[in-house]
Image (cartoon, rainbow, N blue to C red; front, side):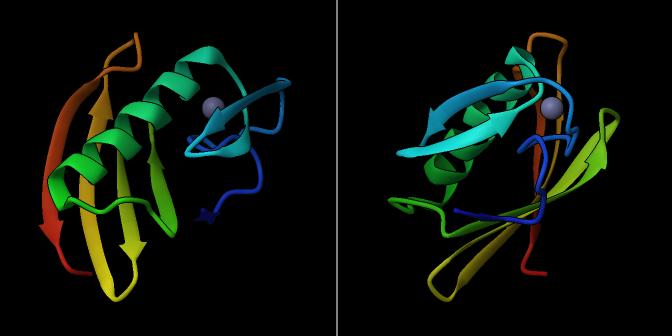
Length: 98
Ligand SMILES: [Zn+2]
């Protein structure tokens, strides 16, 4: 999965040393909460779109809210999400095509 961040897959932090397999790929995360957030986000996008897998995921924002653009083949999905302190999705709003 292509991502716009080189650090943590959710927040781009470079501190921490947590590697977790998501979607068959080992990814770097700063903390366990970000792992939960990323899994919930990817899972929800797949659920909403019916895509078997995501080819790319760009994330912009911070803990107050993140705008994510997911892409698979020729399809894209933009969503605005927020998470609670456990990393579970609080808001998941489809923004339509970018
Ligand atoms: Zn993080």
